[in-house]
Image 1 (cartoon, rainbow, N blue to C red):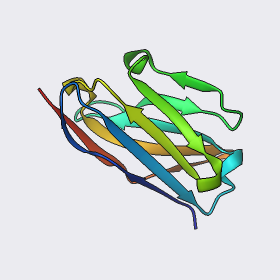
Image 2: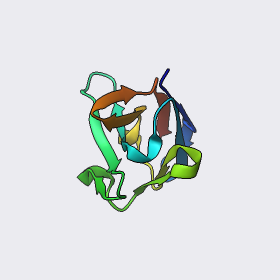
Image 3: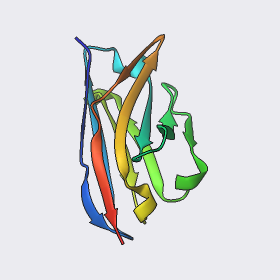
Length: 114
């Protein structure tokens, strides 16, 4: 059974930092493209950052220079380091895995207060 378990969300003041983690089980992690998406209330889910199995990275423009995605294949974990957080970063953040089949985590809430 495939599981993606996110952790690290919470409440932080604007300008602060959080580090999200997503640990996968039931998949050959190193083969998977991994990503973080987010969904704010009333809005569509959107891509935040993506890292391929070859460590090619893409960021959405709204997080460039503030967020960093990384992966540790030995730990089956992908990370999202979020710095200089803004109130508009408030959303549920979802872990995503893709290798011919797509999987989603359950999401972790990030709330940034002004």
